[in-house]
Image (tube, rainbow over all chains, first blue to last red):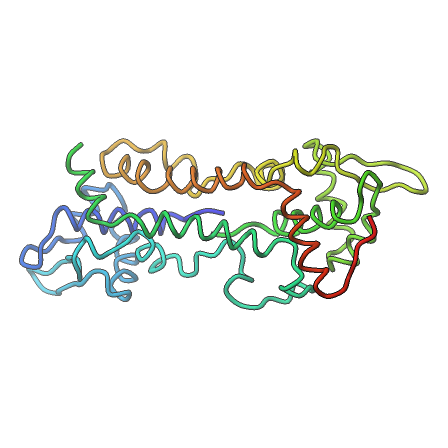
Length: 139
Length: 147
């Protein structure tokens, strides 16, 4: 049960944007890739997903680039992870019915997986991009 | 972010085994029938659980598996660690690469916190609690266990 590099890099991109861009001072993917030492191609794919989720916005052209689409304090880690990882549930049956052979109401484990998921969500929901940027900036 | 089939089926089967055997062996055939899991797969899973010291096998006519400790003494973390390895929300190598402030911050404020919260839950929750819950769910349907 893992968050993939998509999830970890998405957080890096968005915190980097919170630290290094403004609506009137866009950051290019090339700059982000250089600061983060990540492949620009891969970042482009992830940035596309973050844009689609309405978390960042982009402008094309010579002075184009990326910035946050809303206040950093209004973006939680959970939103960022959901934008790129899709459904974060540890087991599928928490989200949609699966053909596992037994009824959910009688399942010995479904409730427990649900509690585990709540733990993950509540931590991810409690941390904002603003807090991450502030901490990363003060180190 | 998924719990593997081994973790899902393994835990389900173990709760079934604990609910249906109190100091008596339970045959994997009966667990397979109740939980609709293939016997072949269960045999693999229980071999892993036996190596981890969670269940023991008894050979012979009345043979089968039983818990090797009381269900109060087995926590969810023991079971999942045996079936999946220790829980970590991100791969370890990623956290070792934390050579800059942003990655260090993500480790401290996100990944470590999630790991701590989940691992605490896994250590607190015992197999006995899952069994109790399972019995309650199934009793509502009038399905009594004779234990």
